[in-house]
Length: 245
Length: 245
DNA sequence: ACTATAAAAATAATCGATTATCTGTCAAGG
DNA sequence: CCTTGACAGATAATCGATTATTTTTATAGT
Image (tube, rainbow over the protein chains, first blue to last red):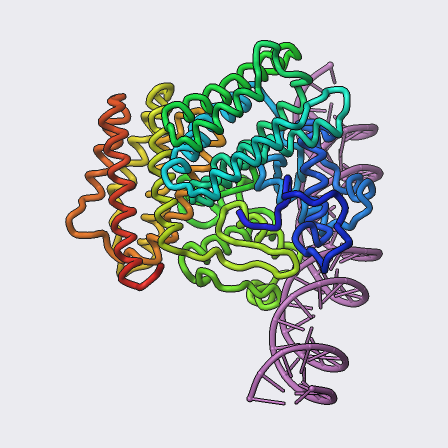
């Protein structure tokens, strides 16, 4: 919980926006910056799942000292992306079929619960945010050939799912869902070059969103559950193809 | 996830058991030891909720250098017991009525789900562990007048609840439940000098355990949910008494 | 008096070097 | 041959000092 996070913040053209005043928000200390860079490196698969993280090598790679490096790695432990053992250092959290299935199951439980709660107590602001996130997401194509497109889509997708459940008024629950989303994204970015042809993900998102703002609890939660489940199934098949147990 | 944890480990008389060989398990590095000590200090209320943690003062108090101190604090962030902000340091996570209610709600959702899963796929080993934990717990009195008794009971209680759901085969879920249990315990130790007179907690635990090993899903999950809910209600009243919002 | 600004103190973050621990290798003994 | 133990190299953990940032205090101007 807490800690200066970022990932899919808000608009902002790109850079530090050297214009108005000074937006102090995000990545300040070296440790924070490293956490972001490492998180991205792990989720994108740049750092191989299960591989050991040599501190000295990493120190040189990122041009930093040990203290902030450890600081950054420590944060990724909270995210479940890095594992640690005393005197034996850090390693990128491994991936497995069982892990993917657990993530999918828990997403079905927690995200659906959070959506239900959001529909129960969410306000108009929440509704509006959903429609905005949906629009942004659906206006962005996920082109496998261009990685930068992919990253943008991932960020917007994550944003959409989090916005959907942001009305639930439960910080801890949102935290858990955010973690699961993170973990799940790693699998998608590693194995899903394209979504399976029989799905229209854009429409799935639209249906969920519309059900949510219409407060049709049964409809919306059903659609969300199916959405999560399908993604899980797809990913499972891709994993199987690559022979991962 | 991961990281060398301890809290309510296993038997062990008390000390490091200077007898047989060398049990390398737990608290090795200074950072790990600190994490344990700090965790205990926070849960027990020794470190006041919401208070700032001055690094320099803490460094002198615990007779350590900054590196391991930060290391230890970083781990407690994962536990949700400490909050952090760039350039502004650490503070003990605050407590509030809303927070307690969320913890209770999530425990009802997650622990009950984990129990259901455990009953579905748990093996005989799991059943046996439950009976053992139950017996240990019920043989231990919770005497408010002696703090050391209290700590032992807390450890066994935590152990019981975790054992109950340990058959679910879902590491992430168990991790979440462990966090929630931690957070919840802080409230109990801070505000529940004695359990309310109209409860027989020992019997509640027995009923849950018996239902679990008998694989009576409806009965066991109902009892667990009620158990968690009652604890939440009790704590809420105590908080209200002390004027905490 | 009240705000705004600047200096000073307190505090957090980082660095480079040192110390402790682990891991693999190789030789001696069985 | 296989196991055991000592050594050496690699790696992680810790320290003390330095640098950067924030917070407080003091000062000047209105």
